[in-house]
Length: 89
Figure (cartoon, rainbow, N blue to C red):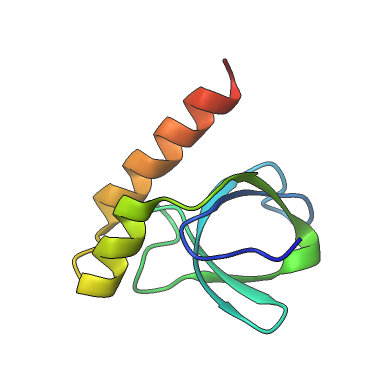
């Protein structure tokens, strides 16, 4: 399954295996991932799609903030926190 912006994914491979990210963008088989802490909007992590697992679908609120250019790292942190809480219930 192909990832889309604002989805929450978990890394399956690499030194960051098990970490949660939000998809910022997609370019071919590469994903631009952010978590708002060590991988911020200004410097996203690049990872291949086959190395992540999609956990949560797109968020209309986040997508609209992306389009308006108003997305910030605090929004990303909040989205990931909510997504992880839902997964752990």
